[in-house]
Each structure stands twice: as structure tokens, then as C-alpha cells.
Image (cartoon, rainbow, N blue to C red):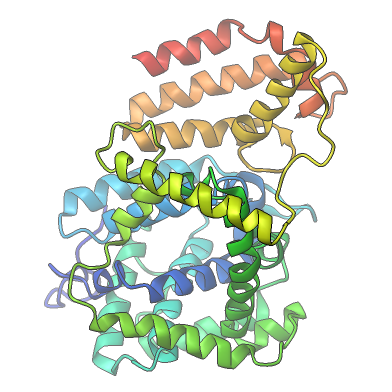
Length: 425
């Protein structure tokens, strides 16, 4: 696997000991830029279809954020062994994602041109982030960082041939893809119009639904407006995205404000610690859990006060069914488990991509090598075949919440037992 140099023999290694991009890891501006880059990725038909079918970004956005952040840290690590191991993991993950979109067009997450576009959006969004925050990169810095991103692609594909070698050619390539290939895909629309409005609370704020709903009601539309205003004008026009009055000024102000954090003492902002803290639950063994528990108690009190002052609608079941019997309670528990655990992609149905997402998350958390990862996927695949055979009563190739809840007592079959055995191993 190529992770060192491309081009001439005397060329400087593309991955320096301290990559330029690593300076952005703890930069609050990157939170805005990564959202923008994700929309540009999702607007590509192949990426959008893969996201719609396989991604957990709707149902589990915080987990997806954590995994993406950790993956990029590994891919830009100074240690070649860390980069190679992560590249191999990503390639195994992407090799399992292929299919067709709603228009019958095939997609493949291993398509080289598509993977190049994903890397291109990350680089272009980093450059745009600096420009919008009043700190534009000089030409030498842009050249050096572009070399790092080409090395990122080379680590995945073996070479960086799908991205132009020259930076000037890259800008022409980027403009051409925006003009000719991007679409108003379903995945892009979900990110812009659904995700911000229905973003689930991270574990830290899970016990304060009113407080979270109030904050989301304010911040969600602002993030949406900032993201739309920052997108390339040709794509906004093609996708029919509205030009909201004042949005460009709001966008500029958000990037400038985030850029001011450069004056904070070094180490005050640690993105990895922030993400991990947001994911902590009160019963965690992590020492920070005690602080989280205290924060949650205060947030619950604030949430209760806010509910008295401004009664807001919170994401709850609109038609709760009273538990009149043990059977009714079991059914409600099964439906909740289906929604919160099994339906990983958030589309309201259970099919193979949902169980594949479970296997993918477990393999990531356990940091499995290829043989163990394959055993895990095989066990989940057998479980899916068993569930489909037992529960897909209407033969549509997937399992609804009703079909699952109706058959909960009979679900502990041999395949599920095999999943447990593999996990224990």
C-alpha cells in the first residue's frame, strides 16, 4: 500500500511528520467545514446513494461524528503503521457497500473517482473555512496541504491518480464536478432539511429533552442557513436552494467567531475529549462520568424550568398507547428497541444495511483485524437471514416494526446465539 511518495524520487514525502491538516483537528471552524463537506459529498449521486442505504448519520449522528473524527486522526497520523491499518479497515468497510439508487443507477463505495471526490470536498472545505474566517491560506500552505490530501487518497487507493497533481488543475476539476455531476440528492436534502431539525441529543443531554429541543430549535435553523450559504453558488442554483436574506452575513460571522478561538491558550479545546464527553453516560466507568452525572442533574433542573416557562413540543411518541397488560408493555418495549437499536439507518425498516451497521460499529469499537471482522459480519449476515425468514411476512425483503414486535418472543434463534458467541470470543 502506498503511503509515502508519489511522483519523482526526490519529491518531499506527502505525509510530513506534522501534517498541515492536523492543525485543524481541534479547530472549532472545522465543525462548520465538515458539515459543508458532508453536504458536497452527499450531493454526488454515488456517495448520496451509499449514504442513504448504509449510513447511520440520521439515527446516530453523534456516533458517526466520533467515528469519522477518529478515522481522520488515524489517517493523518505520523506513524505509517497506524495509517496503513486504518486504510485497510476503511477499504474493508467500503468493499461491503454497493447497490443501486432509486433511479436504478449502480453505486460502489470502492469506486476510485467517487472516493477522490470525497477527499476533494474535505480539502476544498478546509481551504474555504480559512478564507471565510478571514485567515486565507497562502499558496505554499495550500500546496503542502493538497499534497497531504493526495497522500490520504493514495493510502486508500494505492495512488492518487484520480486527483490532479497540480493544484490549479484541482480547482478546475472541482468546478467541473460541481457543475456537471452533483445533484439535489435525497441524502443532501436529509442533511440540510431534516438532520438539523430532528438531531437526537447526545448521551450527555439525553436526560434533558426540553432543554435540548429548545437549543436545537434555535441552533438547527442557523446551522442549516450557514451551511447553505457556504456552498458553491453553482450547486445552490442547480439544487434550488433558497437565498435567505442575511444568510451570507450570518455565515461570515459564524466563521469569524469560530476563528477567534485561535487566541485561546493552546490545549483549551480538545475535539476528541469533547466528543468523548458528549458520548458518556452516567453509568460509565470513565472517571469523567461523575462530572457528567452532575451536569445532567443541573440540566434536568434547567429543562424542567424551561418547560414551565416555554412549553415546547418535544420528540416523543405522538400517540402513546397505555400499557394495559404485560403483552402491551412487551410490544411497546419491542417497538422502542426496534427504533433505537435495530433501525440503524433510521428509515423505519430493518434490513441488511442495519445489521451491517451494527457489525461495522462493533468491529470499529473492538478494533478487530480482518479475520475476526469477517467472522463478525458472517454471524450478523446469518442472523439477518434468520430474521428475514421468520419475520418478513409480506415478502418485501425487509422487516417492519410491527412484524418485529409481533414475533419478539421467538427471536432467540441459533443465528443470534452465534452472534453472541462471536462477540464473546
